[in-house]
Length: 221
Image 1: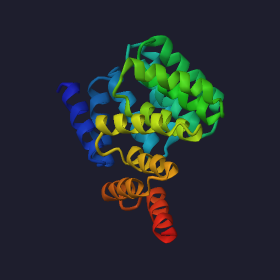
Image 2 (image 1 turned 180 degrees about the horizontal axis):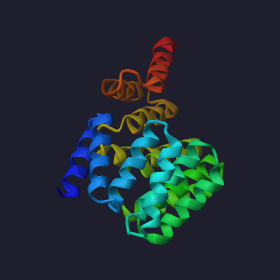
Image 3 (image 1 turned 180 degrees about the vertical axis):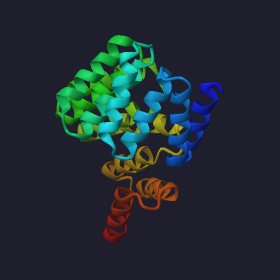
């Protein structure tokens, strides 16, 4: 009759994409302990992933009302919902609230950088991505996004270094693998570009960007 084991089983089922079963375990957790904020956030994440945005917002707000330390993740969740709705300023406000709770946590810093990137404020995006990487040198999302910005600036060698670091941190990070191919592609290193496009497709045969770029190289040759 303890809440925590139900939450942990729910998380495992969530990771396995068994969402209906995960939801049942999360709901049982809340039944046993209505103030279990971790589970409220987990339910919010589950509903967000299923496209049930209004239900997700209610769970995040319930977690925030409890004023526990993990409210940080509820603010992140709310920010993610606003991004999906293309309400960037509202998303930025939620991420800043998260950052105020945990000033040294890289996730909120990364997300703020992502907002600036979406708003085409590239220099601000670079600043925040770099801050996230300084805190967590293996933060693969920030490393990858920095690399993409450097590709656009024709700073290919720096981009390659960042993509390789992202892949070292997460060997199955398909987007970073594909982007490494893009960097070599722009440098004229065609054989290396093909190697990484194919490697990305090995992990995800439906990764359209790598498929398109690989076919382009093959047809050109």
